[in-house]
Image (cartoon, rainbow, N blue to C red; front, side):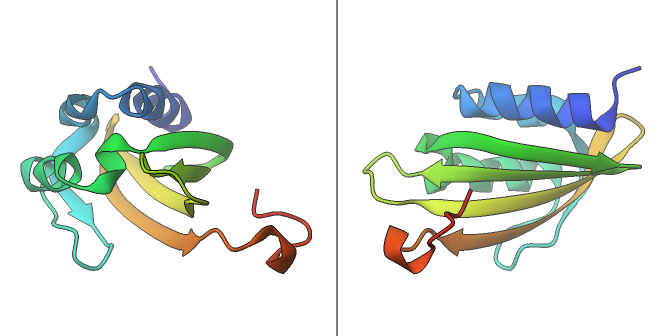
Length: 120
């Protein structure tokens, strides 16, 4: 049986390579989204992500932490148009081999002088 960490990491790799529809095989139909403005439900969430800048951004995974049914990913999201991008931390809860819930924290990457030890 695949662990939650393996499920999330392989799904992230597929998604980062441009396969948005991989979410169809990863999310429960009754998927719950906790981020303001983002819809819950597998199909509604996939449609939302497909039309968002996330779908065309470069995602550079920095670290993954897993404990029990939770997997946390920290990554650098770099928009197609460039710039410093965003620091993102996603929390995924896995249930019965599928993603059941998602929370995130997103922060613009500031000028390097503002973060002497770096964001990542």
